[in-house]
Image (tube, rainbow, N blue to C red; front, side):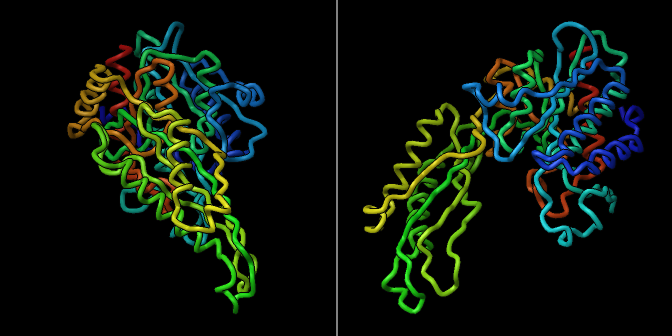
Length: 402
C-alpha cells in the first residue's frame, strides 16, 4: 500500500496537530479535538463532536479519575456509515507537559522538526504520530469499504481516560478496536493497571545544627521506600504471560519536603505510581500497599503513621481474551504491510485498552514509536514507522470492512 500513503499529507497533518499544545486540561486540548473533527469530516466521515458532561461522568461509579483541572472537554467520533462499526481506530490527542523548552534540541516542542528520517516534537510518539497514521489510512481506503468503521479521537488518556470513558458512555461502540499507541513494532494485547498514591509523613522539626534531636521526614521516607521495595520485589516474581520482567512496579515520582535549608523537615508529601495486576481489584491492591507502608521499620512511624490516599487516575488492568482471533488479524495486517511478524505482549503501563475491554470490545495496541520516547525531551518517531503503521491500518480496514 506504499502508493496509497501520501507522506506529504501525513507531515502536514502532524505539523498541524503538534502545533496544538494540547496538555491535559488546556484550551488546546479542546482545539485539537475540533481540528480532528474538521479533518475527519473532510475525509468524508459523519462526525459526532459533543461536549462531555463532566459532572455526570465524574459522578459515575466507574469514573476513571483525573489528575488535571478540566472545565471543558469534547468527544469526537467519525463513522463511515450506519450500523455497528466493524473496526474502531482510537487515538488520544492530549499530551504531557514538555518540560523546559530550552532542554529541547529543536527551537520549540510545539513546532514539528524533521531530522534524519525522524519527526520531533511533543506528542509525535505519544501519540499524535498514531493519530495522523489513522487519518492517512482513512484517506487511503475509506471510501472503498462496504462495512462501517469508526475513528475515536479522545482527550484525557494521560490522566485517567475520561475521554474514552465518555465516548463509550455516549453509546459509541464497535466489533473490535485498535489503539495507535507506540508499541515498537509489537502488538500489545494486555495492560497492567495503575493507581496514583500519595504519602504524607510528619516528623519533628528542629534547628539543623541539632539534627539528632529532630525526626527528618526525608529519613522516614527511606524506611517507607525500603518496605515498598520489598513489596515490589514480591509482586513481580514470575509474572504470567504475555507480561515480561517487572510489569507492575512501584515508582515514586514526586517528593516535596522542607522549607528551610537549616531546619530538619517535619512534613513530607510523596506521590507515585503503583502497578495493578490483572484480576486484582483496586481495593485489594490498595490494601496490600497500605499494609507495606505500615510495615516500615521505624519506631517513630509506629506512633505517627503515614497517611495514605489515592488521588488521580485509576487504570484497571485489561486484556484481549485468550485466543481471540483479532490478535491474529492484526499480526496478518502488519505482515501484509511489509512489517516483520510481531509478538503479542503485555505492557506495564495503563491505557484506554482496558476501557474497551471492560465493555466487551476486543482491543489491542499497535502504533509508531517506542514507549521510551513517550514523555521524553526531544520526543521523536521515525517517518518510516508512521507510514508503515498507516499501511497496516489501511490493510486492517480493508480486511474487516472491505
